[in-house]
Image (cartoon, rainbow, N blue to C red; front, top):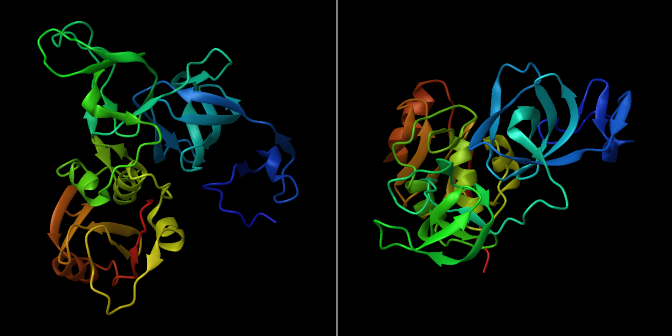
Length: 290
């Protein structure tokens, strides 16, 4: 027992989710309670409560299994990631909780009220989920359509239905060009290499794992060494991943430039190898939903 990945299976010394009973050893097995994230983005910390491992985004579901003072320990529904989160960033999901209808499809957006000069809640990152009501609304100072939500009126062009599938993951990833590199980040305010890939493919309707080793193991189909790369293919190193914009150019969030950047794949591969990061370990192609 205890061979499951603790990053995505909620168990720790003394406590585990009830559905893992018989699979892991623990003193207590508990039922979780579903909560909704009410901050734009909030860090999820590792077991030491001092290291960011990922982030939860506004409107995502987080199942709480234990509370300890300021903190709640549990699992993010989106990708299954487990960790500690501020309990003040969560609200219980009840029968009265509004149904979410849309998600943000641009790197960042903000709500407003009856005029574009008045800012509401935000900024909201790509992947944040909101509840909208009614049809397009006029907002003074703008000719664009807006949709009302609990975070203010949001430009309709910045939202898609929850089940919408955008067609070009590489193009989605490219909208983050220049965003800062932040270990564990999942927003345009700062993100890491695997989050860039995850957000791009989630927007295309595919649930990508969170970390690059998980993506290399379980996401997409391996390509033979001689297969020509094309737009949207993934290239992996030990602990790193990028997405191809065409057969030669790689887009990746990287700690060399501390940003999301584009460079020739050959240049990146040579630099990473020279810096001790090792050779390319896999090339993979992800089939998009019809």
